[in-house]
Image 1 (tube, rainbow, N blue to C red):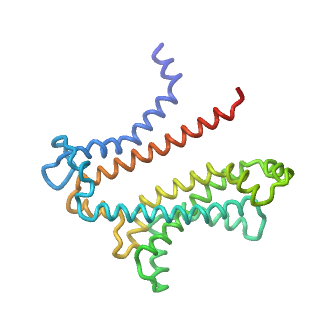
Image 2 (image 1 turned 180 degrees about the vertical axis):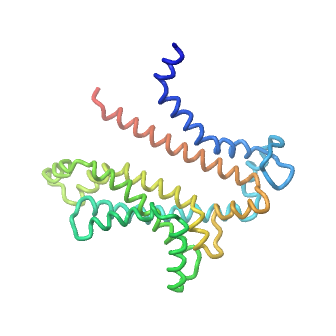
Image 3 (image 1 turned 60 degrees about the vertical axis):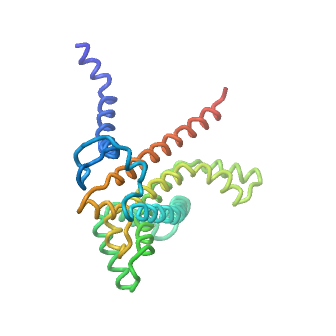
Amino acid sequence: MAVVKWLRRNLVVIAGLLTLAYMILPNVVVMVFSFNKPNGRFNYAWQQFSTDAWADPCGVADLCGSLALSLQLAAWATLGATILGTMIAFALVRYRFRARGAINSLIFLPMAMPEVVMAASLLTLFLNMGAPLGFWTVLIAHIMFCLSFVVTAVKARVMSMDPRLEEAARDLYAGPVQTFVRVTLPIAAPGIAAGALLAFSLSFDDFIITNFNAGSTVTFPMFVWGSAQRGTPVQINVIGTAMFVIAVLVVLGGQFIASRRKNSASPK
């Protein structure tokens, strides 16, 4: 009976830990096999421990070039989607205009639409325009599908903002620009940061839309897909592990900074 009572009391925690373990398990497998030394071309069975791939992560031709291209695309797509998405979110929350409801609905279409449909539609658009497929078509496509996620994240934050804080700033003779920079922007910053991080991860990870509109451009996900047809170099696991560790550190760093700010703001 004691065991049953303990399970009932901690059921939610146990379910959460099991779900977290299920989500992290693939990353653990990738991390483990980044230290493998396979006998053949495929890194699917454990052979022996080795750090050779970590010592030379760019040992495979074009791997680091495709990684650099993906990082560049993700950075520019994040910048474009964050700026446009933030402005759209503020406009949808703060202003009343015609077709506002329709725009609100259209914003969610890229999130609900299958990626292959959007990829084919964008490819048709670029071909009809006569635009050469490459870096710029991929960048435009990435900004387009990341935009909805940024708008959703920023919009949720803006809707929870207390407008009386901005009114208080104006009562204290702050101009529109000063009010936005010192009051509005810091309050909306967590939502903007969340949207930017989401846009970066989506852009860096995308394969379907990129594959349709890349032409001869090869990003890191496309390189991984192509390598899987003829072999899986251990360096791919090294890059995946490094990206996972960096993402975890960014999240932990954000949580630490937020905790420090909350403790410093709390009355003593």
